[in-house]
Length: 386
Image 1 (cartoon, rainbow, N blue to C red):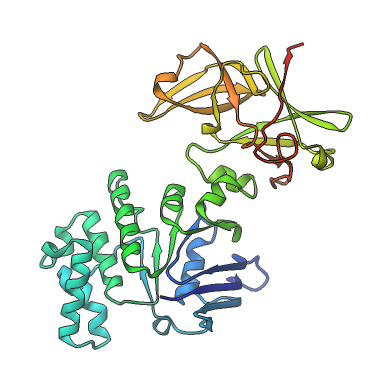
Image 2 (image 1 turned 180 degrees about the horizontal axis):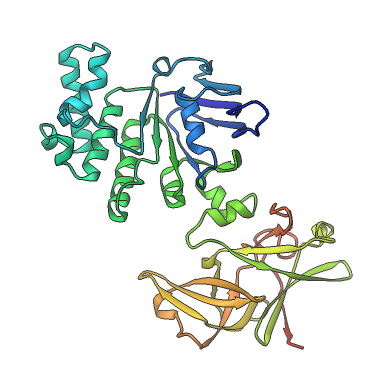
């Protein structure tokens, strides 16, 4: 196992051009599973190639166990990589594909056979060792590609979107196998994906990237519950967070956020001590679909009536779409509680969970909904529509 640290890593492909990677600072401890996630072109695969030594960095340092390996050749970094393309040798058997790297290092035959058997048992492909890649399914080929890396016993494993070529069902199965494999081996792992479900389910730590910049780095729970900006909030979560443009007004020292739907309206008081940050800003409220629940007109809570526009059953949940502040908003409800399109229902917003963002910069605002302290809730005043 090995700790991996990136210090102000930059990458530029030509002098005078903007950096593809911009001052990347990340650190993961021995045995941790790091996910690099973001849309296409964000720099996540470039960063992985830099860690592997396939790309030279322009500035900064890459350290493994405290040693600077920024200028070391790939073969000297003790890193194994699994690519999106399986890159198997078509004329070789599964056994020979797994053993190939060990043979190139002139490992004794007895040790090679031991490693191949160990890896085949770990990945449950013992019955496939005599087959050629053309005789395997996509999931089996991916296991073989993983087996070739596992036979190395490196300090760090790198996975570059290894499940992208698989169908949806097989992706879920392989995702579980990768997580189980990591739990058994406890080897430091860096995994690149554009799939935020993979990021949330696999990673101990997640780095969300955009335009060569790490937008946020933390545990999946931290990133889901406390996104740093609009991009992170919109990228992480399925269905994504709702974003509702707000109308704000001030009464004395108190700021209020107005939320409207048809003929109903509620206003949400915001933290008095932080109210000055709202002066002159266009503000967007963010709230997860599961944080909008069915209410019964409870006094003192953020509830209002809304007409159902679209209903999307998914099996365990039903997505119900309504309009709040003239914006389509998704609510995640239980299947037996979902109304039909055109019906009206009372929605209850969880005041402690809503987040505020600057509409111009996208940055999260340091404003707590409620009465000034998290967890106390908010007093909501119901207003009749004018």
